[in-house]
Amino acid sequence: MDDPQRWLPLAHAPGLHAGQLQEWLAQGQLPCDLPQQSAATLAALGLSRGTIAALLRPDAAAIDVDRKWLDGGEQRSLVHWGSPDYPPLLAQIPDPPLVLFVEGDVTALSMPQLAIVGSRNPSPPGRDTALQFARHLSQAGFTITSGLALGIDAAAHRGALAAGGRTVAVVGRGLDDVYPPENAGLAREIVARAGACVTDLAIGTPPLKQNFPRRNRILSGLAAGTLVVEAALQSGSLITARLAAEQGREVFAIPGSIHNPLVRGCHRLLRQGARLVESVDDIFAEIGPIIGKMRDNAMGTHSNDVAQRAPRLDNEYEILLDALGFEAAGMDTLVARTGLKAGAIASMLLILELEGRVQQQPGGRFCRRPPGKV
View: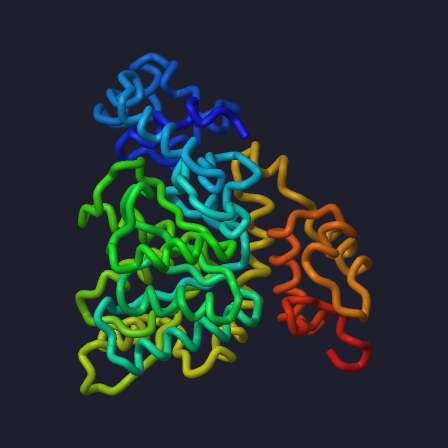
């Protein structure tokens, strides 16, 4: 990975994202070289005065805080635009972040993900619904993504962990602390269980209200779809759902009683075209083709740097199927047999399972489905 010091100034440039740099990227330039350019060059890219000022006069003290945090733990990393660890689905949104601060396993960010969001003050049945959906989706191979908030978010994270799966927490503050503090233990468990906490906000950034829509576009952007469990009409979860729709991702909503104000936001989403969900099968029916379409789009819509690294997935499927016999094999075995990364294998296994070509066995192992049983 490149020296983080070259990329950290970008985290302190307000409003800066890869969507603003299409001309710069098309020329084969690197975003981390922006601070070395003239004000006129940066203005020609359409950057604001505040962004230009932050790039030309970086806050050395703040950057030093970032660097000290990165050096403070083995599981802390900075994932930057164009790197092999940058999540491919996130790269497709209109305003992808240039840098991500990550604590945990960075490969979790590239796993097939389903976001689950909802009320911070859910009903007991709503909380249980989020937990059970997360549990079943995690058992089916999805990484569960949510925002580490109280209520539905926390239940979704816990459901994934209860199933022995991975979960990703996208937060609206710097990773030097946890908000809300009640979920500090949950955040530690997510990291310890091969998941990740992630943000594009610099270390020391407080949980300001205006940062949460910025967080939400990453939350929805990492996932193939977003499931809203309970949401009032003024819920921030509706912002996440709107961003998911604008990003071309599927939006799912669970209906409820017309007398329950906590589901009125879900009912509004259903009237606007969200997919009605009564069981996880409703999600599986939609998400398989979506993941396949996103896989194809990802091969053609990344920056040149990312596209040059993107594998030819058809060939990789053949390699994986050749390595996968009718006796169950675990992830470590498949990595050793194929030479592919665990994240890529997990994505392909999910698609092959949805297509009925492989089946999952206890213990997270997979095998080919016998002929005649597809």
